[in-house]
Length: 223
Image (cartoon, rainbow, N blue to C red; front, side):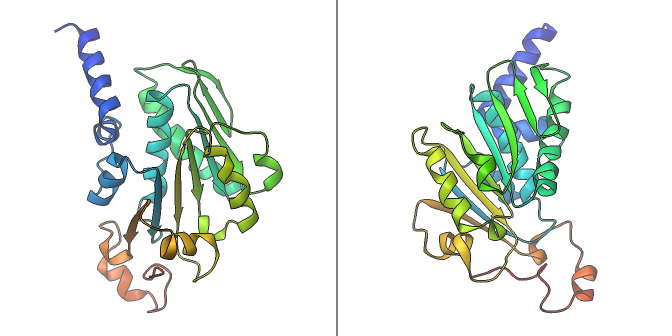
């Protein structure tokens, strides 16, 4: 089979299955990550311990959306510029792997990737002034959502109204307060809820957990 046909078949498989896409990029998802990647849910909330892989999962979804649902606007929102930068770096880590086969970048900066198919991935710190002006968002990812303010959350929700865009909230726990906890506990059946504690994460050893205090945030998540 010609190399071009092989590449086309690989790309089609990646477009149809985000888990295949992740594996193509050299990442083998945990079962819960595969569930999130394949889920058609428009609202997803990831209530996960640190180092569970929630940001990696979100980065894969962001890139998959930009590549295969053009012209998609994907926004990455975090409480601070540093956190926004870290999530965007994960996106770019995967993009640089796929770019060897699909050189699509039109413009690239520390916080923005624009593709020749019309899609954009934009990373923003959690300030209301920075998010004004965006509309028709295909995918809105809110990282460390438990630490994002209520006013900002209410400001970004209309961005996905017209486009019927997807919303993904991901965070480690921060008490029974704020919109993250409210959506987790009372948000209704529209949300796909994924809970991952440290003792269910294969990358965290039992020995490490034994060293941690019993009230460590690595262990607990809000119920």
